[in-house]
Structure formats: C-alpha cells, structure tokens
Length: 126
Image (tube, rainbow, N blue to C red; front, side):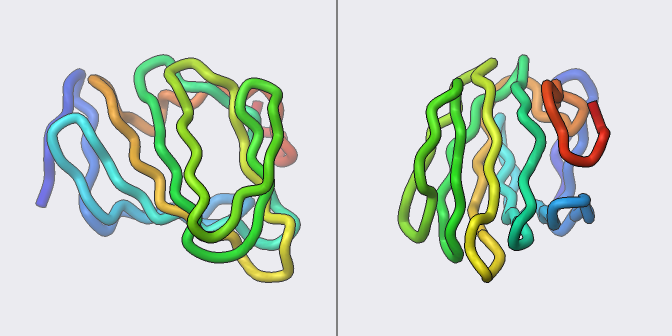
C-alpha cells in the first residue's frame, strides 16, 4: 500500500533504512500519519534534531534509553511515551545492553525524511 502525501512525499509499508545508530521500518501509513518501528543499538544515539512539518509520539517497547526534548532529559523504557511537538529539539539514545526499540508515530501535513534539521550528530551528518 502506498500513500501520496502533500508536496509529493512518498512512504511505503515495509520501507526501511539502516542508519549509523540502528534501523527504522515503516509499519503503517495513513492520512497525515506514518508509523515506524525504530531500533537503536546499544551505546548509539540519534542526532539532536527538530522538524518543521511534523510532530511525533514515541512509545518504548523494549530496552532502555535516554530521551531529550528541548533540553530536558529522562529515562525512556518499556511502556514510556514521549510527545515531541513541532520544532522541538530532540534525540534518543540507547543506554542499556540490549537495543532500544520504540514505535514512532509521525503526524502532520508533510511527512518526509528530508524534514530532519540536525543540530548535532555523532556521525558527522550535520
């Protein structure tokens, strides 16, 4: 199943990508939302980033991590949820011995992998 989103963005169920910190895979798409399963490897973290066109809601399903939203840090583990408002700076890291796995729900008018504004990155992608 494919859905064409505003401004020509395209996601497919099953689409995935390998990143320096782990992987992501699209598990659902719909009108103004995309759902991904994200796996962060032990000791790894995503870039410090924000989005101009989407908000996100995260649900931890396995492992243990640390999440930062607008400079505030907290533990992120099984059953925890995090809301990331539009343009909020955020990142997540895996602090346990097992991968951190969480479900990310992106919602907004424009859902596109290019809507990642990196402010800091361990892998020189800024």
